[in-house]
Length: 487
Ligand code: AMP
Image (cartoon, rainbow, N blue to C red; front, side, top):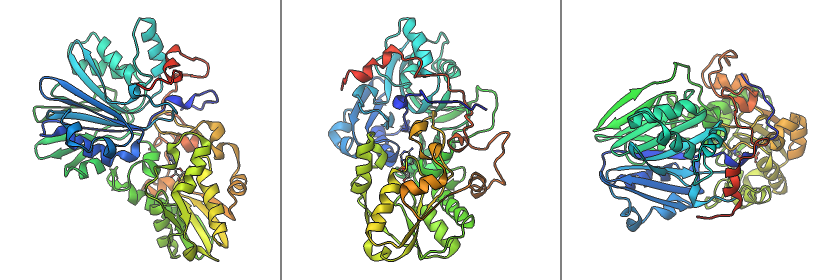
């Protein structure tokens, strides 16, 4: 296991995204638009679809939301064919250029290939530097383009062999959906850090980041793509190859805590069920007496329900959410983010006035949300506020595809629980214990030799080496980010 100092890591290239693909289905792009719409929570900065009609590829990419961009017949008409893949993009960069919006498409000597990628490669810049030294030209700053270049450069013969060759060279957390003519291909990283599921609609296979994207199109959930597995869907048949040495999976714990939609199924249960169990466990580890359990909507809803049911204290809505505002994190600047909390939530005075409140959220990162909400609830007349967080203290950043800031911005990396409590202005503060988290997920305890989950956020144990050291190794290709180019 690796414990490292990541002080210099530049957070600019990390992405959390949603991917979708369908083969052999009329109106494939319309179904892809629906699937992406269900996956909108995974990224709201840009979206794109690549389709294939048996002869030609088509591509449309847009800034903003799926519903605002792929809602019209005339756009979908530009994406004909029975094969399509799509992508929702989230990046932490201020300047999202159209060039970085996926899926990417390239012509290779094995034919055209479209690639949609969720995750983050930990050696992308190192590979990219070598490729640039060898004369490669990069169009975007995304690590996904590195994958395409490796596929294109591979000397192997078939597309699947080229893809296998490429993924042996990359490291990190990734889920890929690719379209190589009539082949729909899905790949999940060797530890299964990022999610990818297989569904079936009539006779057609579907690939998606989460099962909620299958539900929206009426597809049946078959199974998750396994860690290190490549699935190839062609002529209505699915075959699977597992080119990596066999390893146990280690999915990202944050998909369970926050990232996946509550109705999506991971590891046999909805994440709603998992989150409720985190709340129950949090209650078991607590002894506070209060009048009400109040969730931070919507991220804390499930945990707050679990907590209140376990401890038999009334659950009530102490905060009302404006649904026309995106996730707070979506504005990368700290100033705007703190404003975002106010835009999104307001205190429900009638239910909280003069009450002792247990305020439940799923996680605490920079503390912006809790800080604002606590003062909002006091201003609205709450008597006491006891903040309870349904995950352990986040002390370490992420490099595998979740937007988790640098160590200096992570509150728990720099302050004790008491200091955090003071900072957010609450009467008391408690986090779910790491053992409690594993217990709530049905494990007896955390297996310290080979942890069941990728949980570096709390433990600092990084299962995959972080090869790129951006601070020390500023690569010239990042110039694209600073040009302000918007095309
Ligand atoms: P903060 O306000 O910085 O403490 O962030 C905590 C809030 O952001 C919680 O309400 C979480 O639901 C949410 N959150 C946690 N992690 C993420 C993430 N990676 N991306 C977006 N939102 C997040």
